[in-house]
Image 1 (tube, each protein chain N blue to C red):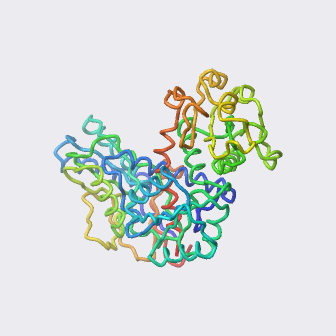
Image 2: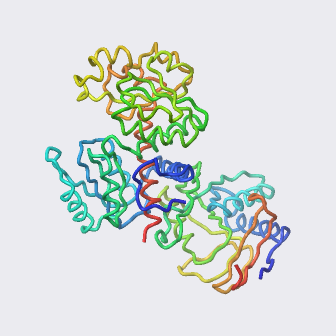
Image 3: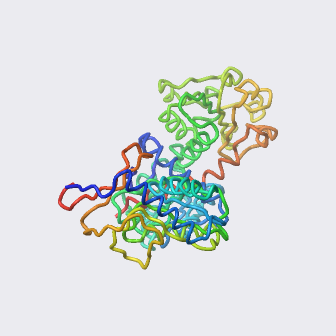
Length: 179
Length: 306
């Protein structure tokens, strides 16, 4: 059984609000950059950057981060994660990084992403923006900007579909017991 | 997806597996370009270099690849002079495994040794060259280097020049490049091109000038000095005169042709210094890429164990 949690317009409104919150909290776009976690996070980071540009008329750098090398579940997963490109075409040192992901769940991906970023330099700060926070944290990690909070059962899965992947913008909750 | 425990040869790899290794290596190459060239990916693992034949670049490359993945490395020194019998070889490997090795990287003068060990061991066995059979990591790093420079492999005219018969590098490269859709040709004296290769859909040229025409990639092989005086070719000088890569000969290939060599080079024999150090040479790229490819292989093999 599946349930639609957000449609195209819901996602767009959430991103516009998050863009405003990012600018407000950081008092503008100075020293700001966005880093999306492969893959969903990368698309969302680019969308946030264009929303911020509409509001502030400023370009902020966007990077993409693959966390495969920093995961803690090698040997546990049935297959190796596909390694995608990490492209951060700017020095992270002294920048305020907004880390962007589609779904915040256990927090382990974010831990891996922070380790990866810190290996690249010493950012001034790392903040976290996620489209969906579905709870069930296993690490002390909290998002600074959230599109939508969705209480879920552990057995459920949350799927974020984005047009950049060739599907319609949509967030879906898949109930347990159904593959 | 890679489901095998060991990397023994290119012959048994699928095109998908080869591409997965090359794509993963691209990610590791990014890491090697950073200030901190190390990732915690394989922390707590142990790799053992078990080299029964001399090697500098392959052993060092594996050692550094393991270190860049945060894996501990032991270089097991094997006296190269003593003949290692089958039984003691397996005992050595079992001992190394008992020390807690997750990876056993083996080079041996006898073809097939890595296959034997892979059956006996729980650790991942990586073939770093077995006799005249295969040298799979060299072929993979060569493919990675070609893909990086040319953007593709399919359809490229790739010439392998020299002692094909005794070269495990050539053999692995032929398997790999054929699978990836390249048009492979071999150039060398008839005595050094084995008969089995004929009929594999590979063009064979016994004349260097004819063979180099319109080639995109040129791989020269090391002429093994120990083959001299065994009747394969009259003398090193004559070999060099007929099969050595010079600027005049390189001009017969495509304008943007690239030159590769697995090393170690005999400068002035199979390749002139002018070419080895020239703008068409990818020889040092091969060394750098070897690290990324070996990291990718260890990463992918470790992901499927247990």
